[in-house]
Amino acid sequence: MGETIIYDNPKLFIRQSAKEIIATIDLGKSAANNSLYVFSLRNNSAEAIDFLYFLCGFLNTDVVTYYSQQMNIIRFSQGKQPQIKIGDLGTIYIPDDIKLKNEISKLCKEIYSDFNSKNAIKTQIDKLVYSYYELSDSEIATIEESIKDF
Image (cartoon, rainbow, N blue to C red; front, side):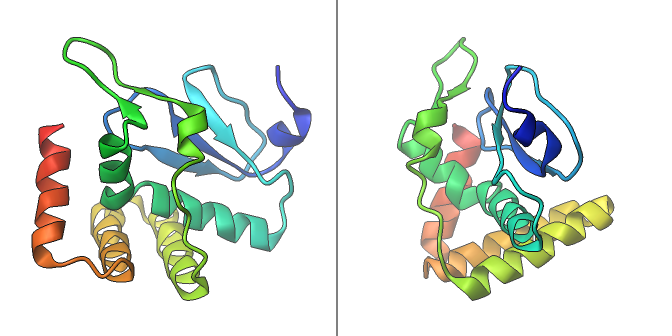
């Protein structure tokens, strides 16, 4: 069944089989089946919750999906179900920039309070990450096209 401390605390669920990274946060008591990976800081402090919102927003960006596709973190071949390996997820660089973390965390919380604004807010988060990595318009276009073609 897993660790009860994870069941009791806020956590991030990451879909195991998808062509993109799909993460969602759950602040309540919950468990997942074996098609989801679960990440928890094993406490429910305000700092842990803010970090989980940041991580959720960051992992759902186009930059992370593009990187995951290019680095074979997301494994996909024609006619087969895409697979994400848990060990490979740990190789994704998580920025330690406080301003970026706070901005993404705030925006991600907005998605959960107004789901209808999800697409517009995701675009804002993507723009923050593009800016953080100082990506050019050409590089952004390459990322967006590559994701569509994967």
